[in-house]
Image (cartoon, rainbow, N blue to C red; front, side, top):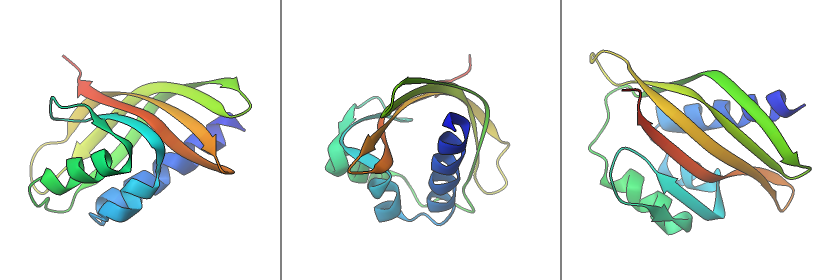
Length: 121
């Protein structure tokens, strides 16, 4: 069950990222989200997530692939997870990044409450 929830969340995130659909990405995050992406600033809540994605330069054929995910439920409504996300943009070589997230069930929907991505080395 936990792995199905995580796979579904990551499939939705990857699809929205591939479409550069900022509002769909925002909707996948909790209203209390903490977001650390490829920039040093900590972003908070929907406005922070939106600001992060709006500040990115236009991305050519962006893709995100999640792998090596280890997920642990912390209760009925919280899942802690870590693994790898590989980003591919245009003709650039794929970039593997460490990923940690916390998913929470908010209003009956699983959303990302904490998101952190950092280089592998």
